[in-house]
Length: 342
Image 1: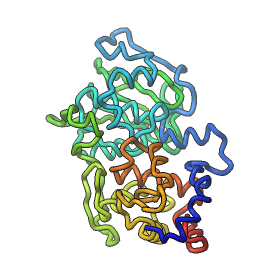
Image 2: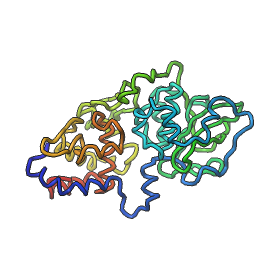
Image 3: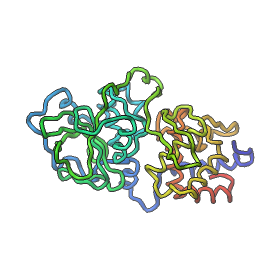
Image 4: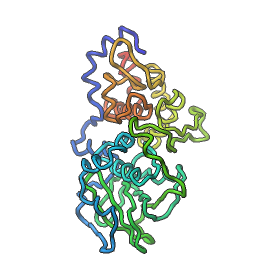
């Protein structure tokens, strides 16, 4: 918790906290791409290929807007809220996989990280209906370029011999889009993954809170002594040690430049002083809340509807805030030392 004298100054700083995800020198489109985390940089209409053999219920999804998808599967909206609605290809992949009854993590990262996350969750490599296709950054397929930094992810709907039918949504599409790939000779830089036998989930358990136990992809490197918790929960009510494990995972995936001892220790120091890494840290003299002490706490809703209870959602918001406002944890710490808040 912050001292009362510090809290008084936070009221004047509330406007500053509104600068979440504002990146200096970026155009609005750059910021949207940063928020999106994945997806093609261009429009989704070029290079569209749809084989005449495509059939089945999934073809009725093609052309639907993200809003229509949200209304079609409202029971999955809360669970998938950790992926930015409407922008992220990962939001579409989460919603679609959940509708198929497949277990996917709420924090599988950017599109180019879904291969590692799927593997960690026990998925099997190969093109199979109901699986996913993960694209490395900068891959061009059927004339559509993926984000150089974030890659892309799509859902495998149907496999006809060597023809793989995929659906995708998010940045650059706006509506559910379909195209085809080759099963045996896919573009370099993409991999196919599908759930192992029995890798399904009862989706009814998380309709109210978006919680439930899932096989998330949280891991800690074995050769690291700073975080020793191998956490495989979904982030809800995570302990401080588990929260640090989540932060390490997110930094390694989305903020590789921060994956150093200096930056890590700076982040630990800042959030030790802010909240003790407690998801329920609630300042009694202000509306600051959670691990990053967002003011007010409701600002973290931009990272997920479960911001009140989920440490991972709070950490995602906090890392984005530090990135947009200070550039790095070490710079945030320097500011804190001079002002007693950040």
